[in-house]
View 1: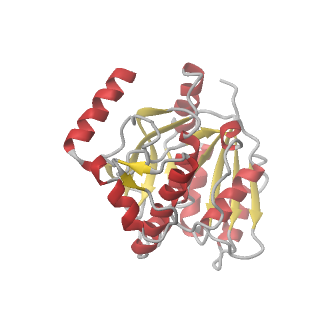
View 2: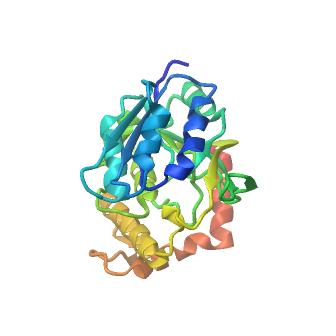
View 3: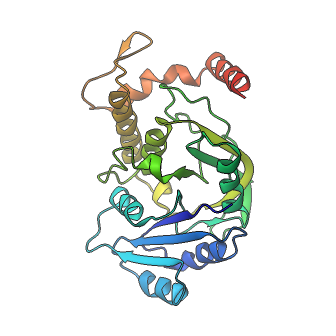
Length: 277
């Protein structure tokens, strides 16, 4: 396995957690990787902590935004520096299991036609002690009406850089639902492989970007991401219900997809996944 993988870390004020993130990369069984860290104008001593940890290690590159720009802008910027064949985001307050890169890269060797992979993730407490495996992750059936709603794709998500370059890229104006934007754009170019291993440690704590108190903003951003996908895919009707031309209210979008939560629909998808396999 000779493919290079770029680990992309969009960082903001997570210095106190970063050592565990850093150590999990150093401990990887697969060694052909680089780490791109883009700091979004942290206001604590994070940059000093990161610089001290990565000092002298040529696998790491630290880039600093001139001003605070948000998650979408920062993750998009990470990709501008990536030189690997495969890319993956790792949040600075999270960590990887030692086999994560090796297990992910192996899938691209075994399945030439896939464009991305994802795995199970372990939910951890603030000290990164394992609590339980996130239960909803499963192999998806990818089609034009797949929007990861309800959530099925989670970390550890890896993708081909050449596929990302075919898309419009991560929306730089997003501050939440950035990963969802990436997933849906990548999946428009091919299929995903679900790795039935736990490869990612997801830290639950009060300051996490995806765990913050702005649930309404997060829902609005996810609705916008889905609406953008509908327009890219030129979908004007779902179950004879018209897709609004202009995004105004996330509830309009989620109501269009409400049928995807029914038992009958989920059973149908499960059958399709089995037939696909």
